[in-house]
Image 1: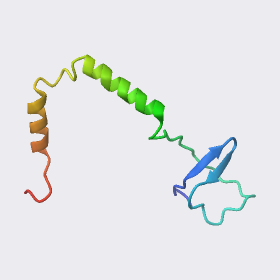
Image 2: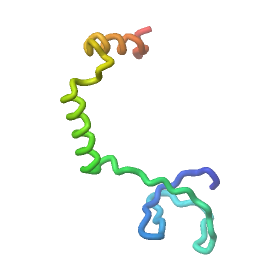
Image 3: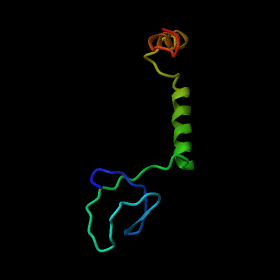
Image 4: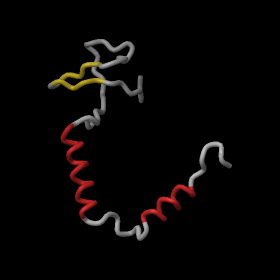
Length: 86
């Protein structure tokens, strides 16, 4: 069980297992855990914040360190190996 990852939902002071729960876990057993709060990928506020950031970037004229965006894109595509094209 040590070092394993399990999905759960935190409701108040309680964790509710979403999928697989740890084997051999009894309600009376105390178990130290570390909880990471995950951002919801579908969160409307997250999407709105991303759209706002992209809008500000576009209004600022894009990334200043890239002089020719089309050439930068061609160069970056050339650098990585493509499947089946050795």
